[in-house]
Length: 168
Image 1 (spheres, one colour):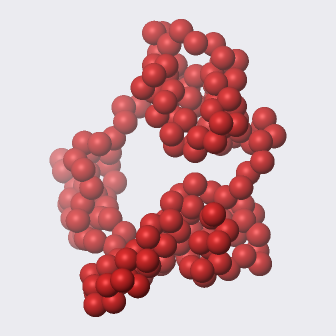
Image 2 (cartoon, rainbow, N blue to C red):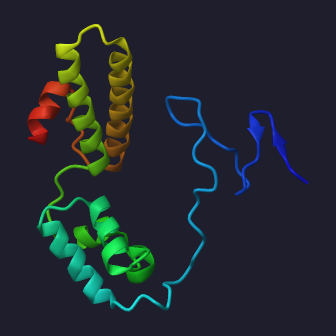
């Protein structure tokens, strides 16, 4: 029996099929990772080797998302969490590597600064003006979340000019 909710129909995993944040389009169909509870047998690397690789790549300046992609594509490790029992960010934190700024917030601020420089040259581009407003709304929402978790300082406030200086 399929359940029909007022907002739409139920998705494959039993919840509502949710729309994206700023556009009412749905996400990609069937893009859910399969549920696996243990590390596959074909992964040959030991836990210590994986952790040393992560620390080495982080010291070279790679962001956490790129580290995960490199481990998946070049070393055949489908999930660091299953192989080591910890997330990449937790491994980096335990290694004592200095945490600078959350990667997702950094990428949004970079995107907003690129759009801002575009808008300085093209002031009548109203579509990108709206896009910049939506990106800044996401930034403010993320800042509020990271402040509540104690990841960034409570006295840090977002402004595009100061954030661009901090990112350089």
